[in-house]
Image (cartoon, rainbow, N blue to C red; front, side):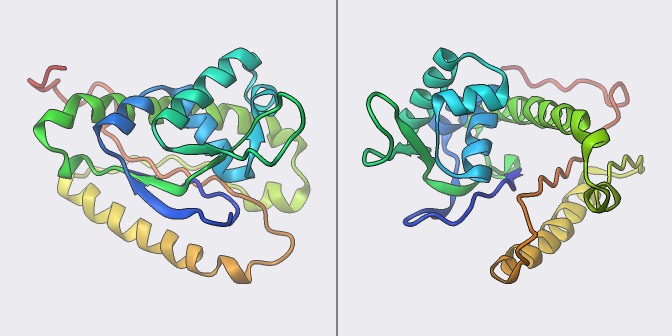
Length: 205
């Protein structure tokens, strides 16, 4: 599972981070996933700006920023801002977590993170839906919201994921030549059993 949400290029920003158990636990919260995503999409920001964007109170935004900082996922920009205003930026462009490579003792944290990512994606999609009636014609015509139902086995999904991520990588490599009209675009790639079609497993948290 990769979070393909990228930020503008920032000086000193690392390309990616592979999430360990501690960071998975920090990100096992959909609000924190969305806060981190926002910093990667829009660049450095403050608690008050993030609160306004996500519809949460500034105190809550500050708390989640401190948790992300404790997990070494974001850092403060001390030379930016005035007075008590604190600016934060992401340390990495994207987070990577592959459940297939998880050690047994990381399974609970990994599932908690996957749950948070799914909830965060749904929340971002809901916010995007509110803007559909207001999109300019060119962006309305270019955007798509598709839902396909396929009969696949786990191995089929793994191969499809690799093929789709290869396409994303090609577009990522050409970002430096993107036209001036380009903006951050959220591409959500999701594949999961239709709810109710798979018997619950024996795994327990």
